[in-house]
Image 1 (cartoon, rainbow, N blue to C red):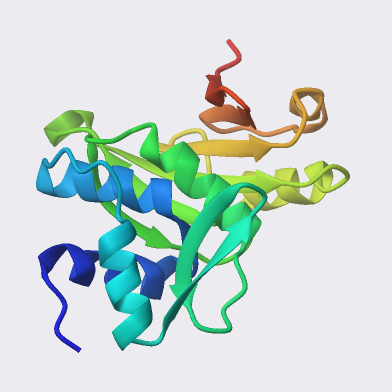
Image 2 (image 1 turned 180 degrees about the horizontal axis):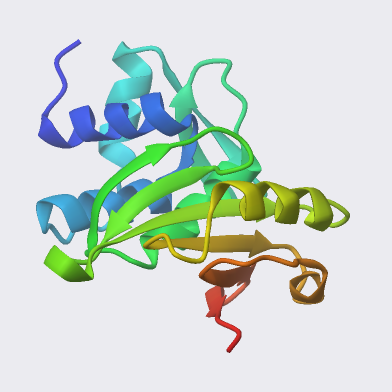
Length: 178
């Protein structure tokens, strides 16, 4: 199947992360190629018609993925957090659990390595132990804990450059405790 430049990037994203919401793909395409596309419907329809792709729904949002692939909700939520840093994201990739995504943002000496860790209620202590073992205060790395409830912040006991993200109907909210 012939894929244009935009579809190749959509394929690359779906291959790396699994099913993604169409609105997320749109944001990432517009950022990478500096376009102002209104949607990705035509591109995704072609990919579904001539390739091994399918669309589905999570609530009222449509996603694109490989046929028979189940969406990973934590990964989809993590993409929303990463997309708040666009267009300053220079590199991104899926990571090993409990980290969902690692990416670099910024330029030159202001570039930061950022890890997003989804935290389910009740897993705060386990995540804290992992982070304190793997990520030290002295490292030039930022950890964003993707929470389901703001109350989880108090349950996390970490010694690193920590930030917190919550997703609500208005979008992503980022918090830093001083």
